[in-house]
Amino acid sequence: MTSNIIVTDETLNSDESDEHLINWVEEAAAIINDVKAHVAEINISSILPSTESKMYLNLRTFEGNTYCIHVGNMGFRIVSETYDSIDADKVVPNADEDDIFETPHALLDKISPGYVNSFGNQLCKQLLHLQQMRTEFKEEDEEDLEKEEEDKGAKEYTESLTNQ
Image (cartoon, helix red, strand yellow):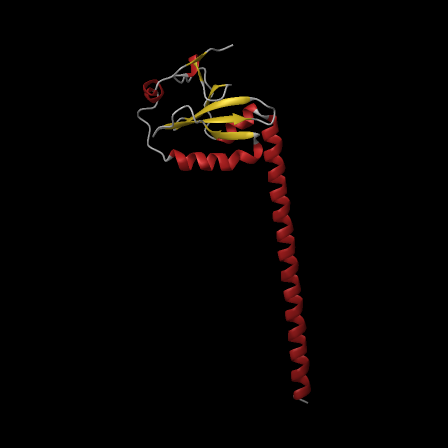
C-alpha cells in the first residue's frame, strides 16, 4: 500500500512551473460535463489547491474505484486511489513510471470497463438517432418531390384544358 503525504502549495506548484496558464474553472466544468454520464461521481477536490497550472479531480468509477487525478498541461495523471490526496511517490511526475493521458477519455478507457460500455452505448444511441433523422429527412424530400410532380401534372392538365 502506498503512503499518503501532506503536500504544501510550494510542493504542488513545483512540478509544472513552466506551463501555460489555463482557466481551470472552465476546464474543470468542461471535463466534468464531458464525462459525468459515464462515471459514478466526479468533482473538483475541495482540499487540494487548484492553481493557474493545475487542478485535482476526485473520481469514482461505476466499478466503485476512487481516484484523485492531477490535471495539468501535461495531461491527466492518477496521483492516488483516495479522494483529496497525493501518494508520496506521485508528488513529482515520473514519465518513466506514471501513465499520463492526453484526455479524460483515454484515462477512463484504461481504468473503467463501465466507462467504455457507457460511452459506447451513448455513441450507439446518437448514431441511431442520426440515422432516424436522415431517414425522416429523406422521406420528407421524397414527399416534397411527389407533391411537386403532382402540382406540375395538375398545372399541365389545367393548361391543356385552357388551350383547347
